[in-house]
Length: 235
Image (cartoon, rainbow, N blue to C red; front, top):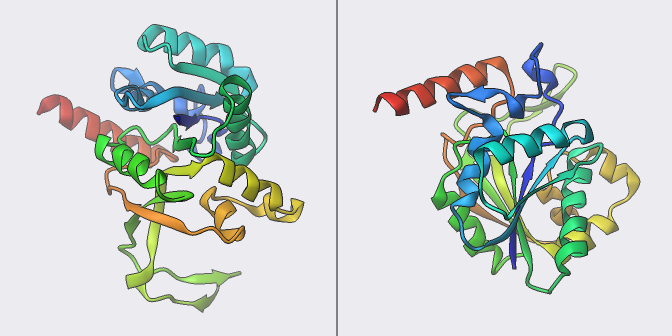
């Protein structure tokens, strides 16, 4: 079975003073979260589409989905304190509700990347059937500088550098095993889900993302997203 998990647990601190969490802000005629969910509803191969959000926002999320989405595969559950806790809450829900088979997979995506394309979703599904972990990336355009406290320590060759996006997709049993092998110290600093598998020695396959698959994190990002939506309406 293949499952989708929409990660909507972020607090949105970089969005500034807004009346609600960034994933619930309007983008054109619909909230950002709804536009993201609608892309996944189009994929018939998903057994369930799990939206994971903060506990205080579960009712609001369910109300939005009831208003905009008619697909019964979409369910809402409570997230965790950190991103990977939220991810594992979704995995626990899958295991409890459906059980787990060796080849079950999950396609995880940021709720605030509403411009995800069918091609990217297809590529993730096809790749995770053959690889334990899959990351969506685009080649780095700018030079990457590694440093700490205003001191550059390394400038890697840009040809080998990529910018990570989502979806990130996993064989569920491999992800669970890798996560359970992490120390508490590793979990505390882990900001990327694919790194769970890398730390466990699993290979991470890469598929091509799109520059347009932006993450709406700041007020500037929201302005860009609004411009994209308005341009599509005009066209």
